[in-house]
Every structure is written in C-alpha cells, then in structure tokens.
Amino acid sequence: MVSRVRIALLAASAALGLSACSAQYQTHGYVPREDDLQQIVPGIDTRATVEDVIGVPAASGVRDAGGYYYIESQVRSFAWQEPEVIDREVLAITFDGQGVVNNISRYGLEDGNVVPITRRITRTNDGEMGFIRKLFGNIGGLTLGDLDQQ
Image (cartoon, rainbow, N blue to C red; front, side, top):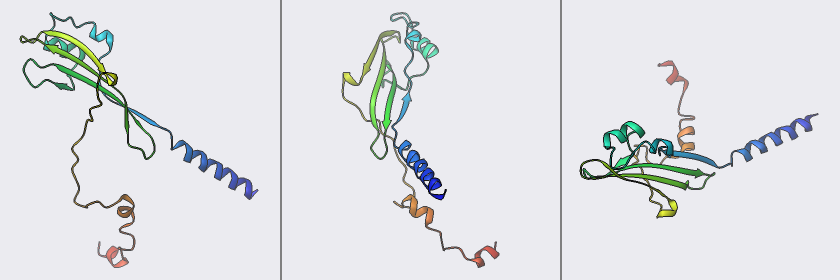
C-alpha cells in the first residue's frame, strides 16, 4: 500500500515538473484591427480622427509631421532561456504637413531587423543579493529576547 502511494506521489511530482517546462507566450502592445483601419481614409482623416477611431499610438514621430506607430510583439519564454521575439508588427500612419493622413503601412519581422526594446531598470540598495539568500538570510537572527521587547 505504501509503495503505491510513493509511486503516485512520484508520478504527480514528475507531471508537475514537466508541466513547468512548457513555453509561455506573451503579447505586448497593440495594433488596431483591419476593420478599424478601414474607417481611416488617407487624404481626408486627421490626427484627431485617427486617435478617435483607433486610439492613441504607442509612439509617434519627433517632428510635427511625424507619424503614429502602433507596435505589437509576441514573445516566447521557455524555462531558463532568454525570451525570444517570435513576431512583431508595426503599423505606421504617416501625415502630411497639415496633419492629414498620408499613408498607412504595416511592417513585420520579415521587413527588417529586430530592434530590441529595452527598459530602464532601477537597482536596489541590497546589491546583487540572490533570492535564496534574501529568503533565508534572517534565519537564526531572531531571539526570544527580541520578541519580548516588541
């Protein structure tokens, strides 16, 4: 009877361990649907109507006549490996000097190089202390005298 319980526990832990190694997919950003884009007419619509119809862009051009850019990326994360961008779509809406839509273009990974999108990371004051060290760092550092004083 005990050996059956051990075998069941071993099988359950193996199944749990194997399920933890499946790839995780995440989508970042937003690109408007095609039916929403059909409502935008080049030569007629302006920046304001684009924002009303499909929303505020993820990025825009630096100049006044710069375009709007909607960016969506799909990232695959697997176990200990570095996350990998498996798909990226960029929708570029350009405007003329008066702010009227000039062109709508779509770009994907096949159209160019992958541009890494980085984040600024604020370092903490604890240095490079690992998670396990933080977790077990205070074990043994607490005495009964410390508890009575509180």
